[in-house]
Length: 85
Image (cartoon, one colour):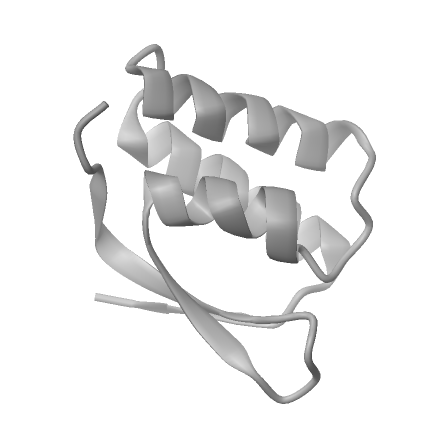
């Protein structure tokens, strides 16, 4: 699948306290959720977000829906993030 950049990036807290990473694409969001997610790794919202992000990566969901699901999961998990354009 081709690179899927996001129009608005998200700077989000990593597992290491005080360290942030930039999520700027569907691929980066998938990697972060599967490898670096500092919050609760199970639950309906995170599972939905993982599914939507992976579906977007495969071309079966929109990039915007992936970004929205990612944000919803981060909010529910209480992970500090900032949206940038």
